[in-house]
Each structure stands twice: as C-alpha cells, then as structure tokens.
Length: 330
Image: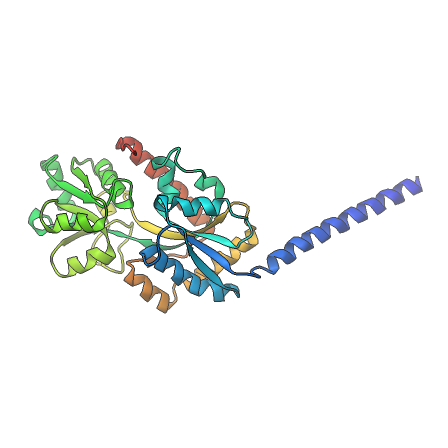
C-alpha cells in the first residue's frame, strides 16, 4: 500500500513539474515577444489614406512594444486579399492587419462565396484605432440647410432627390441605403466609381447630395461651395462641431468608416493585450492626432471587447441593409 501511494505521489509530482515547465516555456515565448519585426498588412497600395494610417501606427507601435513594426502593402480585392493572408498567417503576433469595413463588416454580406475567410472566426480584434466620420453635403441649390429640412423635403417630393455615392458596396453607398430605410424616404441612389467623379457631379448640380469624407468635404463646406447638413457619427465631430449628427433626426443612424488592428485567430491573449494597451496609450498623442486630422480621422483606441462588440453590430447592420435594400452584388 505504502509503495503504491509513493509511486502515485511520484507520478503526480513529475506531471505537475512537466506542466509547470510547459507553462514557463509558453510564458517565456510570450515574454520574449517581439524578437523580430512585426508586419502590418495593408490591403491597399502605397500612398493612400490606409497606407498613411498604417505607417503612422507602425511608427508609434514599434517603440511602444520595444521592437520594430513594418508596413507591407498587399492590395487586391478591395482589401480582402490582405485580410485573407492575415487569417492564414501564424498566430504568433508577428502579422497584423490594418482592418477596415470592406474586408471585415461588409464582406460577409457583399462578398458571399468570394472570400476564403470568416472575419468573425479567423481574425481577432485588437483595437479600433480611428474613425472616419462621413459628412452629408448638399449642393446649395437644393435649398436645405440641415438634416430635418432634408427629410421633410424628401418626404414631400418622393423620388425627386438624387443621392450620389462613391460606390454601392462602400461605406458611403450603404450609408445612403441605410438612410433611406431608417428615415423612410424615397431618394434615387446614384453610385459612382469613386469619390472624385461623385463630387464632380455634385458640384455640377447633376446630383443633389452625398456622404463624403472630411478630407474632401470639409474644404468645400468651408468655402461655401457645398452645404454641410450633418455628420454620420453618433456624436459631433471635432472637425465640424457645428454639424449635428444624422441620428438627431434619424435615431440610431451611424455610418462611419474606420481603421483598426486585427490578428490571426489563436494569437496569444497576452500579445493582444500588449498591443491594445500600447494603442490606447499613444493614440491621443498630440503629434498623432494632428496627422489624423489631415486624414479626416478621429482617434479611438478602444478596448478589444468594445471593438469586438462594434464589429458584430456593424456586420449585422450591414447585412440587414443589404438584404432590405435588395442590393445585388455582382
């Protein structure tokens, strides 16, 4: 009997020691991170707003983590190529994704059968870094000065107001469809291939309204060439505090674009926490917020849990909009 108990004790002790060593090994691997450069994959070409945002983040994140962070541009398929590559990368904390709506919250409803990853299962949210509020602008000749006047006019004149966008399956295009549904108005959505031609049509009085980004909208609002009606974010934007949110007239409306960091599913929680904490600390640095302003971006730096909650809600909202508006994606 004594021999049996002694043997059991010895086996238990060996097992506990092995488990402890395993935990120590896993801890030491995480503690040693990063021991080589971290990559941020960007789904768009160099020089664009997403590329600039990624490089701003990389310049801050590297020193914050005690390592180096490089940006790797992998353009293609509206940003979904970079998302796919990230989802298939080793979950070791050395590959991150500069995420945006098209590849994460829009893709599940607009690219069914065209993507080989599930954003909700194959990628882990870390933190939303910045939001890009959209500004609702109108040609002066439309004769409306705020959101309430627009809704009133649209209801009195169903089907007569033209609403431009920079593409059907974009944050701007779905903002139009979402507004139609939530405000109960009948306006004609005229999608263009990009912001520039849509703005050109608006400036030429060929269309009446448009949701646009701050970079291009604000100079035209300030010069009086366009009328600023509202902002798409749930609160006022520091870039135009005089403009009330669309939600003040259409409760629940929100249609911002955004950038955030995500990692392959399975990335150690300790690494995710380190990156999130670094972002939360530097995202409001004065030099960074000044650069964000040139991109029309508001800093966020939220928690991983809050970012995950946001992604889930936006994916559901976009899916509902695509279905209810009967948007056909080729």
